[in-house]
Image 1 (cartoon, one colour):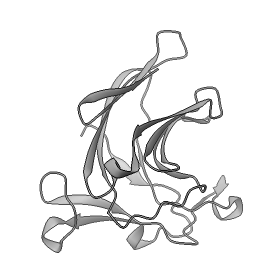
Image 2 (image 1 turned 60 degrees about the horizontal axis):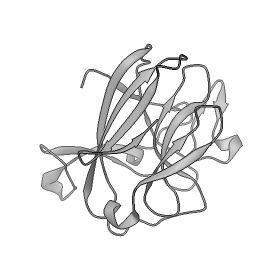
Image 3 (image 1 turned 45 degrees about the vertical axis):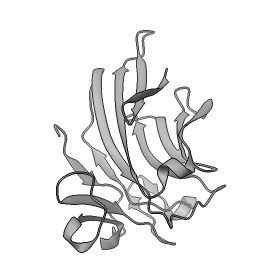
Length: 172
């Protein structure tokens, strides 16, 4: 809550199945309430804007983007569910969340690498370290709650903390 999200890279045609609000009554997994957001990516699902083309850079995705946040301390939360029949496509990179600068590189990425959920530290413009915060068995067929507390700044007082299911699992 407190943010509005929109589908990104939609100029080539964001597929209807790419992001859907689904209902518990239809058999979809739901963390709380009656609805959840379901993402699906298929071969060829690439997005385009006037300044970028996934299609030209061998990428496929469906994603939501939030409104830009200014510096200072912020809290973020989401719950993630991977079905038991989820197929790990490692060594292909599968990003399942990221924090991106408005006119710069990704700073923090969450991904499923060789099994599980990893925090990918890209503060300095490239991956400097990845840390597993959930293993594959913990991911499949169940909900996991992610809570982030970040202080966005270019000073030494910045921080990035990640709780997984109520336990502090990563801090920078």
